Image 1 (cartoon, helix red, strand yellow):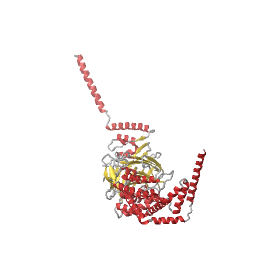
Image 2: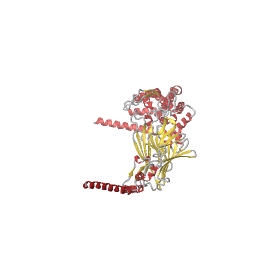
Image 3: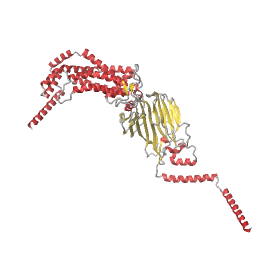
Image 4: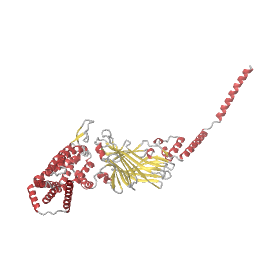
Amino acid sequence: MEEKKFDVKSIIGFVLIFGILLYIMYQNQPTPEELEAQKIAEQEKVEAEQKANQQNDALVTTPNDYVNTQDLDSTQRAALQNKVGSFAYALTLPLATDKQTTVETDVLALKFNNKGGQLAEVKLRNFVDYDSVPIYMVKDDNSAFNITFGTSDNRTLNTRDLPFQPSVTKSGDNTVVSMRLKVSETAFLEYRYELKPNDYMIDFSIKSQGLSGVFNTSQPIALDWSQKSIRHSKSITYENRYTRLTYMHDDGKVDKLSQNGDDDETIEEVDWLSFRQHFFSSILVAKDNQLDNVTVTSSDLVEDEDIDTLYTKQFVSKVPLAFKGGEINKNLGLYYGPTDSKTLKNYEKGLEESIPFGWGIFGWINKALFIPLFGFLSSFLPYGIAIIVMTILVKILMSFVQYKQFLSQAKMKILKPELDAVREKYKDNKLKAQQETMALQNRAGASPLSGCLPGLMQIPVFYALFMFFPTAFALRQKSFLWADDLSSFDSIYNFPDGFSIPFYGDHVSLFPILAAIAIFFYMKMTTGQQMATQPTQEGMPDMAKMMKYMIYFSPLLMLVFFNNYASGLSLYYFISNLISIGIMLVIKNYIIDEDKVLAKIEVNKTKPKKQNKFQKKMAEMMEQAEQQKQAQQKGKKKK
């Protein structure tokens, strides 16, 4: 019994001791205030360790670091501060209800991303594409706009990842969109967009306030702007041909990156930079000072027209920015609108030079003559009729050239029997034959060059119009007869899906067919007559045979090459050749009298003709060549 009592008492004692210990522990547990102080101490210890590790390592943040953090507790906020530095303040601010800020003007509908502060969508309100879809210059992440900069606490940040605080205000009739990336309420980086009524140009500025101690001014800062050009036309290949990165530099010089394939360039003193599409452009304009050391890149995105149907080219630019007193202050312009000469001229920055009117004299003819003339005619005539009237005026202006050419051909035709007799007489002496031929032509005033030289005058006009019609914005979506768009091909038959003829396309255009037929008959009239008068000389190509091939090759080239070109251009060539045929018939039947021409030739033969310096030089060269040939032949005989 005594032993059992001992056991019970021992158990009771242990229970009492354990209970006392629990009571003591409960009484001595830390208060909530003590727990919070302990937590802060641990956090400070962690921060101290992290700062020690940051001294030699630059921090580069990623998009995952930037989230809406207004609901984070103090520990999380401190961790974020450690990660992104001063710009953690921007992440603690409440975001706008919508992730985008929407603004509209008479001509533009814009959406701004609150994250990154850049334009997320640009719609041109007054235009639609070939499929009646609104024209978007920026949409679905086809454009990127970002500033990369360093901070004084050894970080590298990107604006595209950081939240901007939006505000929309009015300044008179203008709408101002301010996007601010804040370090505090009084210190921020601001994108300021000012939109004017009925204006495609947006006044855009990049400014900082109170960030001179935040920026690392020893680290370069740059604006990166890239954009994929959205397809807007029926033929993506044709549109891509006129989509090109163009820029003005060195106070007026205009250059371009490669039309085909990939290309890049570094440019000094840039006035403006144009991501030019066929009929629409995105242009960055330097307003205060030129942009220096700008790097630009162009990449062709169309490898297969059946597969690559969304974008034509990708343009990328890197624009260095400069610090002034530790701050940024850059005034620019952003143009989103039509590649239209009349519209672009309004900004007096030479932006219309981005349109490919042709180089040298060809561009001058377009700008001084054809653009004003067509603008005048189309102001009161339907566009198709305006093309026809302009073609008639051009052909009348150039009719004297055709007269000179036909007159030269008529003289050569009349002289052909005599020329043949001269060649037959001196068939064993080529030099003498050539000299007598030139002398006869000179006396008669029937030199072949008299017909060729006037023909060369047509080349600048021909090429200028070749460049004018594809770039004439006024023709876009203007219909005429069966063509529903004079700036695109006039399809009268589409091949079945998946079927395409190499170099020709997947459709049949009618205007190129008509132009090819007209060219065939015109060349038959002119080249056929030249073939009849063209002599064949030993050792020289058979020109008559070559001309015969050209009669068939030129129309075929027109038929194939122009099948995907603007129907307005094919309409011009069709009407132009019809008029040329008419002029030739009038000249032949009513103006040139071969009997009178022959009588004049006979009179000219009797008049003494002096050789000019060029003719004398040619005669001397021919004589020297003949002497060398004879010497070589004598040397061979001796051997």
